[in-house]
Amino acid sequence: TRTPVNVTVTGAAGQIGYALLFRIASGHLLGADVPVNLRLLEIPQGLKAGEGVAMELDDCAFPLLRDITVTDQANVAFDGANVALLVGARPRTAGMERGDLLSANGGIFGPQGKAINDNAADDIKVLVVGNPANTNALIAQRNAPDVPAERFTAMTRLDHNRAVAQLAKKAGVTVEDVKKVTIWGNHSATQYPDLFHAEISGKAAFDAVGADQEWVEKFFIPKVAKRGAEIIEVRGASSAASAANAAIDHVHTWVNGTPEGDWTSMGIVSDGSYGVPAGLISSFPVTTKDGKFEIVQGLDLSEFDRKRIDASVAELAEERDAVQELGLI
Ligand code: NAX
Image (tube, rainbow, N blue to C red; front, top):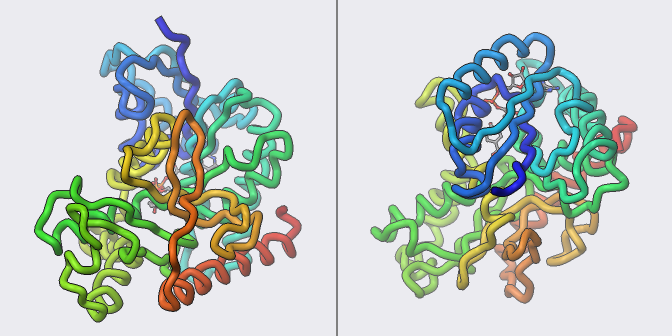
């Protein structure tokens, strides 16, 4: 039998946590033959609810679930962690300025980055879900100088999956026929969902959806970029199960690889590719293999692509400058 993998989830008592933990424990994150230990990190006010979730996990009698720890101590939660899903964050509340939001999250992701640095296993892989995800990931990464920078990633897989679903619907095909979609930039309304390098049933996606530039600009891009707000309006609560599903997809793809002829989108530390300043955590098209990822190189960017990517990357640079000024990185 295999040694269990230690998976840490922060914000474990929240709504994404509730949609995530049962799937991790049933083998969807790492595979049907990989046992897991769960480490649930919450703030003191969330501990009791976290204990309740742990009780329900026990009650599922999942064959792969070995051990569960519920704690409000980051050093305990990240001790020996192989995979860390950083979901808990400080949401923006009415009247909150960006500086307040960034410093509140710096107070969470700085110490968590340090706790990962000091306690996690050598093969630690980190996914930041909590918003602002890219910049929170940057803060955690900069506070973990002993961990290779590429182990810190931010989630744009939900945006990616949303784009795939919209394209499949428009082209009248199944999602499996849609390949090579990219989310570029920040997980925010400035993100650039790119269909121009995508394929549908082996053809250029743009042609498969009717070569309609107006549809791309007026419908597709805003639909994907503003889907989170639409879900809140219609469901009365923010995306939870779809966000948890995307987190599962992100880690599963990272560990198990992208299929031949396709790629995925991940927020990763830029190496300067496509003119994205090195060091920013920005979303790129990536392929994965054997637990490592590579940015897809050599894509021809049109002026339209360039403008959209630059706008989102400019926002990331502003966020980085703001957290630098606040002394968070
Ligand atoms: P909830 O408010 O339901 O849950 C958050 C949980 O985190 C709470 O139980 C809270 O006690 C806990 N928490 C707060 N600070 C913590 C800390 N320092 N350490 C440990 N736990 C802490 O939010 P939920 O709906 O689960 O969303 C979680 C985060 O995901 C939010 O920041 C949200 O904006 C973000 N999202 C990111 C998405 C993405 O695509 N990257 C999409 C979905 C989601 O909006």
